Length: 240
Image (spheres, rainbow, N blue to C red):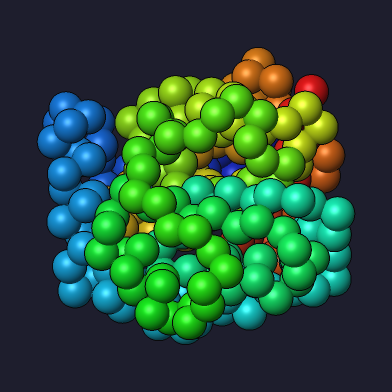
């Protein structure tokens, strides 16, 4: 019995050590401004141009669409939706498809080049595209009753200012779909590729609650993802 416990402990230590070896720690080694410039260069360059293709190959686009199609994250009734960190429009395409016809959709990103790519890819005049820093959103308090934030928090040295801005622009009772990279081995590889950090699930949930966002439900792409605790952190939150 003791050998089994010791073996499990040893495996956890080995996995944690490998994760630390793989994970990119630039976000913790440079100033916030220097890191922000690096992110803009990465996403404005060749790697950013391949983002939509990478999302398809990793199945994030079709699996993410399932959350909207099955109404696990239900867009019906929302009058205005903010898509934070729109990238190449991977989530925005689902918003266009599954929201009510009259819903206002606003797409923001730190990279002007990524928004240009999203505009070309979506081929729709419906969304408004706004170049914006998540920590300084150019919107009035309570502007949106829906927010999607997919794989953006990873690029914030401290997520609290950005999350506080999201809370500020959400209406009371507004709902957010949040997806972010978890601090496991798969997340470490994501960190290496996209120069970002990862999050501990319990720590992040505690932080969200402190900021006035209550978890309505944890979401998983498939039953297999849930069983294996894979696919990162995906939750629906509500502003109190």
